[in-house]
Image 1 (cartoon, rainbow, N blue to C red):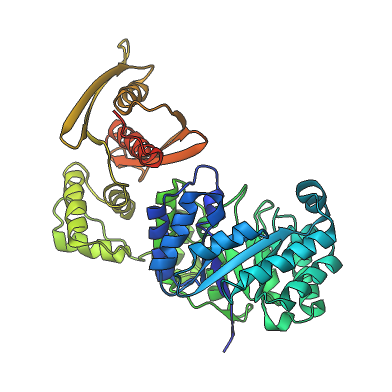
Image 2: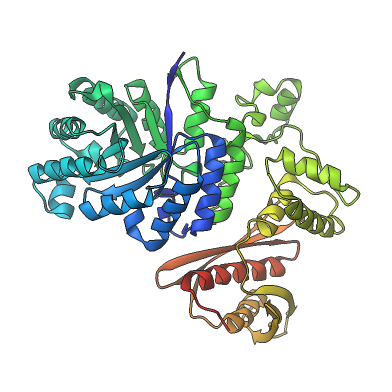
Length: 507
């Protein structure tokens, strides 16, 4: 049987470090549940010492998720490791991932430590982590810019005191594939005891080479790849885990390994991560982008109609995208709608299905055909929306050439209703000023993005907004055929998240 490649998902830790991608503990749990369905081997649930919210998220995931190993990140510091150990205490399978930088620039400029002090800290960190779990991963931060001999010396030392996984990070995305493969080969050949551990790699995408570097590492002895769904993460992001998976699956002739995942869950996982982080998926994104299996040029369409393999190297059904798309309309019944929901990979309760169906019928009465993306937007808007402090009842706008844009909104909180009006430089500005009066909590709008889900004028429009308070970003999404209503819903959702995080009641 081909060698197994272990998949280490760090969407909830490194991925969440993407600007504007903050997740609440409940959202992290949703993603962790989906990652377990996908079948990743390790879920790095967070960095417990970094905040109370991160600690609670790791603790909740450790208690509730079965199957994957649950991992917590910790610097090579006593307090970090103890907090990680406590957060992971109830996990059925747990790992502490501890790290310290080994490159000259990091040791001198950031840590202000000598190489021997770094080595000693690494040894002590692994020793302490072993008191909480037998599964300890050690990372040499900025490994690709480190002295290779010193890197081998540190790896050998931590293996002697119990590290079970050795991680080689390309922290700043500096390496080229052949360089990175050679580094992995040298470590495998020169570190005593490495044959008893798993060699892992964690590649960043600053030069667009994270997946290529990860694959090169596999060909030279690595057996664990760390990455994120959709490739999100610091700066240009991480290796996109779905691309690594499907490259191994598709090119078995050249890459003699296996991954033990349910590939049909890839698309569903990708969309959930995008919806909850507020980070859009570029249309031409490999594997999961809207255009990944789309064909427009006549010669391509003709070829695919004759035989899919002429222009598709992956069957879209492998990643959870239905090959034949059923177009729903106002005459479609509940059974057809439920079939479509299952076909798209969603698992909804009867109550959630009923809510989604009501919204579907409302849209279908005004729109000729309902596409898969319309259905996904309905699910995201109706089912995965966070709990509401305030609910948008209606929005009314007066605007036009020569008119002063004016908006009136009514929001409901429990049994109380609040009506506010405002004037703005445009209709959306007026709506947002009126909504802000109701919430009455200081914040700053930092991003506003509109997207048409399909091309026609009657399509659902999807609005994503981000608001900021005290350095924390809160995102919201709204979908409607009326783009002003979608904008209002997105803003209300973002402000509800802000209220929930701040612990304030609002008006």
